[in-house]
Length: 81
Image 1 (tube, one colour):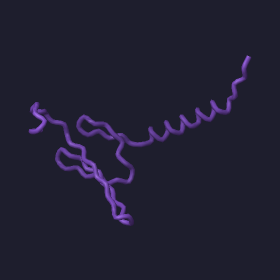
Image 2: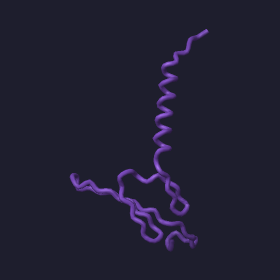
Image 3: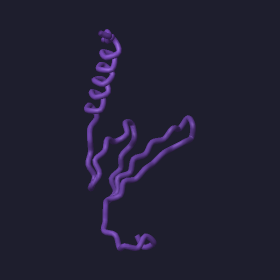
Image 4: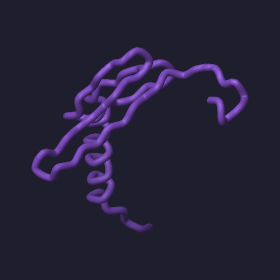
């Protein structure tokens, strides 16, 4: 009968548990039909039907921004939507 080493199995269990604990520790938010975890350290701004997240790095002179828009009905025409 073949022996199975417990070290790799224990290592995988510890990794899984640490990743699970981190994912459950973050707060989950809901906006319209989306459920998400906001990026840590980003600024949030709510503007009537839009949630804006942004961050800046003044040392590099860079920034990033993304916007979540509320859902709406489609007219069926991609150009007019």
